Length: 385
Image (cartoon, rainbow, N blue to C red; front, side, top):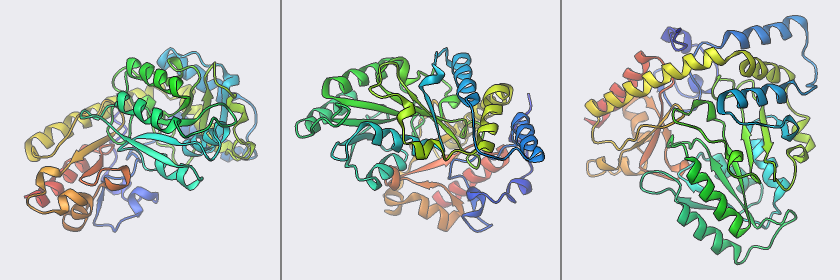
């Protein structure tokens, strides 16, 4: 099986996307969620075909819906009705479009932190009040705390246009911790949400990169919504499109998401995603195998070189959530912004924990070559010494 990360360092360093261009050339970036991979050949061929043939007009048809439904059935045994799918430009626009579909501006939004910052920032920018609930000590959903928050907010929140009092934004698999909620956890979340009049809206962009059994939220919470994309698993952030999927018991069908979002999707991006979903399974399996190797390597390196860091092996994603709190007695910077210290002193860029909701943490992206992964850990270890 070909390792998609088998690219010379000098090749990935010439890329012009955000990961490699945001910082000066002497900085080793292991931050933003881009992968240092060679693209899937099926995607390359599909995009080349539309470009060479001039097939670059507006998006049309339902081939993307059908490709997504087939992939969901094959990968997760999830039966999706293509009529329950709406196509939007990216996952976060799909999340906001769904929130706006089902909630009035006066309704609260809840999520569990630390969490992917846009799940907090986007709703706030759209005028919603966002409340965060801490994950439990194992970085899993704290269902009791979530239910208590629902109950407290429901006391003053009036039902909106859809009848819901608020929304819970799920991240499944969770970013940045890499935890994958179990079916039992999701069922319990659904019970709490229904009891207090909340709707669950799930960001499932990392779903194809779950290394334990993945449960699509709509299979256990039938009135929920999920937003998924091939963009993370096939490294297609620059050719972005996403699917909003409504559950069989959803109050509104996904097709009612704002028309201005559905009309803004790129035909070329849809073509790339169809190719990934239809013909990219072998490439994805190779990627997953390579990511498991990197996860094992990272765990071994951390245990040997940086045993004082808090680290739990992620169950999904290619993101490691590192806790630097044990180093705070050496330098308070480790407890406030370890990523800033590592950037300044080690010239290695991790994602700072504060925007996720955890100051003493940093997120490490291990979707790179073994050579660069080892170098990144070496740079961190040199600063910790």
